[in-house]
Image (cartoon, rainbow, N blue to C red; front, top):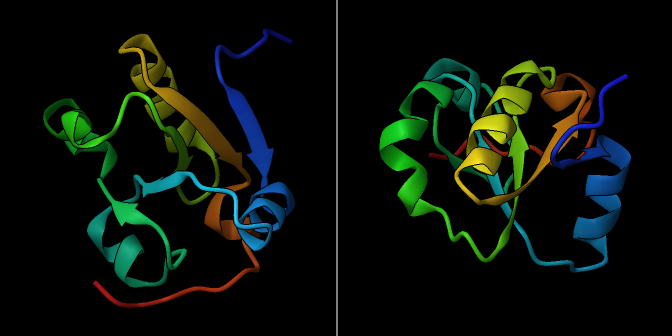
Length: 106
């Protein structure tokens, strides 16, 4: 198996780090309807297709966790952002495996 150029945390690791008060940004790269169906409360929404225009909204010096439905799109987002010099971590399993808090606000 090839070593990824970025870290991966499973949903348990993410929940543990949030509970411990660790600071990192969370970006949800799912589509609008998926975002509206529920997301991690601390997350911001930047759909995968808009990353080329919106990646400059991210802080390249801050660790950013990337989330999608199952981990596939977030992996692609991590590959893209790593290539641009961002410090990103993929949440493996995505929202399908997330059993932590969910919010439905915009």
